[in-house]
Image (tube, rainbow over the protein chains, first blue to last red):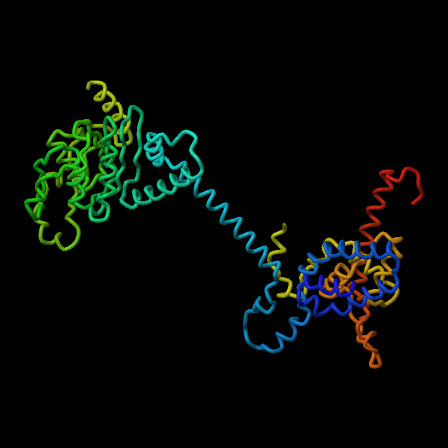
Amino acid sequence: MSEWIYSFLLRLYPAQFRERFEGEALQLLRDRLGEERGALRRLRLWMDLFADMALGLPQAYRNSYALEATAPGWAAAHAGFPAFRMLEQEPLRPSSVALGSMVATGTLALFVFVMGHVAAYHPSSNFLERLNAAAGSERNPDAQAVAERLERQLGALSRQQECSFEKLELHPGNIGYVKLRWFANPALCGDVAEAVMSRLGQTDAVIFDLRDTRGGYPEMVRMMAGALFDHPVEWYNPRATSPAELKTVPLTSGNGLASKPVFILTSSNTFSGAEHFAYNLKTMKRATIVGETTSGASHGPPGAQAARQADVKPVWEGTGVQPDVHVDADHALAVAEKLALDAIQKK
Amino acid sequence: MQLQSLIDISIIDGAMPKRKLNPLPSAAFQILLSLADSDLHGYAIMRQVEEQTNGRMRLGPGTLYSSIQALLEEGCIEELEPGADASAEEERRRVYRLTTAGRKLARAEAGRLADLLRVARVKKVFKGDYV
């Protein structure tokens, strides 16, 4: 009976261990059973066996049981050939698999944790944070709400980044601040641009940072400018290919942006589509340009149209767009913020 | 948990340091000592260890044979071929012998313990008892 129970317990050991030592282990047990008789000694025997189980099992799994796979035999078989030795010569041990999965799970958990925190402290997420706070979810948010919000923020953030809205922040005095790298394709980013513009409608003044904007799609320029008016306005575009491109379109959702003061930051690195945006809003006196004279470099529209329309030069080409307030690009934001606060107070 | 134990590179090179036996577990050391003056089979090793530790250490089959396996893998002990006229029972009881490397390892461990003992004496841990 005891022997039967123990041979069952032996199944917990690795196969190689059983193959090699099962007979010996059972023989040892038989010897002890033969020698240790009486209830007390038998009890001690079984306590020994269970204690042994706890100590011996981990060690049994640590052993490699790879005595046969020794180097000389392998080297002799492949003499004269440069080759790598394969680790697979030894079968994967169960303990290695368990350890590997534990480490992998731990690493993944750490990664998820870190990623969550990076997103939570990203400066541009402040804006979305406040947006959500308005809905009253900031106080006592339960875990589900936090998870959902995080997911939404991550999704919104990545779309926002994809569409070249590098920063979207709420600055002191309820000033909306947008930093653009590029006027993205309206076919792909029209919804994002519209969401950004309608959110800006809830602020008291808007600053467009075009100091590092290299240009973009003329249609996106026209669309974003259109959101600054509550009615269609004449739109200067020397390269327009249809009459529709010579008028702006207000946002269909409607917003309060039309009455808000707008400031545009420029630098000598402001190019092409960004100059287009600044030039039009300046001539319409819709925006105050703060910063440096723009590059004025020649930039045709992308693709095949460039060749056809290269002779049509916009008025700012060669000269750049002059700012209303001349100031170093590095100080433009601070100056614009001050001007915006003044403008808000005057109203 | 040591990172080292995740990657078993000992099979690449037979001359790797004795990873599993560093530090030497007390069970393995006791087995080496039990084999120092005679070649024994598993059950005899267990009895010998029990005797030399005054009954404090009774090795169960799991600990005994996994230690034996580790010592075999590191080349500290070797298994004797059963004689041609061995019975089935004798064949099951495999006999083990200490190798030169095993003797060297046992000596090193004993030396380490002797050093410890010397320190304990200098620090008067034994309070006048003669050890």
